[in-house]
Image 1 (cartoon, rainbow, N blue to C red):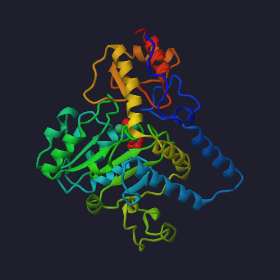
Image 2 (image 1 turned 135 degrees about the vertical axis):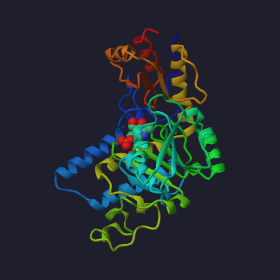
Image 3 (image 1 turned 45 degrees about the vertical axis):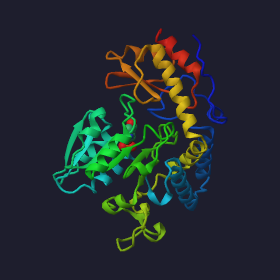
Image 4 (image 1 turned 90 degrees about the vertical axis):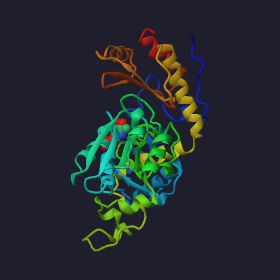
Length: 355
Ligand SMILES: Cc1ncc(COP(=O)(O)O)c(C=O)c1O
């Protein structure tokens, strides 16, 4: 049976990329759009001629911050920039009191777990299966930290139930939306803090990460990683430790990987221009068609990532042999459907798997 889903319902989506044919790995690394590639090439060419404009880099970082804020429906004053999820998680750990309990899903991505394990000060990490996470929150839980979309399985957390239980128990919420923003609409205000590394579903270069942090949480977190860029005026904050930090979320900035943000800005601009619900419907439509024809169960909440048991890696090997880029995590084969894919990618993957 031929796929009924052929083109993105988004006028510019597929045309914005050279080709995503056979690339089912946005959950590993997103593809650069044409605009991102052009921006990076232009920057490297200018730099190789000695034309380096640091103030232009700062403006690019600021516009990226604004675009990310738009993507998660918050203000730029609530967004900090950095380069890794794990560093932002270590920052959020500073909001947990000595001896406090941090609850995380079993098997969540280690950048969301290890910083709490290593936090010291008697902070304890407890785990629960993702589908039981909301019920596992208790009055002793200082923070619940979880990925909205699980990296290894593609499973979607019941964010509403987690936020409701956390609110009832006075627990702070920290959500990793790295595997979500770009295909699944995310509202930062539902959580105390939302982190996102933009190199996957937002198709930015690796090294552009964002933390959306609410007003109350900003008061609880210590600017542990502050350097010159966290100053009220970064260019007047290059020496010593006497300067004042920014009064908004910028005080949690770490100095930017400039070249990554050069590529991130057009990537974020592209995704911010899309209708988020249409992207979710399109990507999960492809994923559901693949799932159905593979005979896999439909998840409670539709996901653009499909995984299935592949303990020997034989299905992943079949996909690779057919020239399809997929991935394998925790004994499972994993494919992801994004805006640069279409029904032909579903057909190619099914043919490679002989389903
Ligand atoms: C859910 C999730 N969070 C974060 C990351 C990346 O973390 P970091 O920025 O610390 O490399 C990944 C990468 O696979 C991920 O799947």
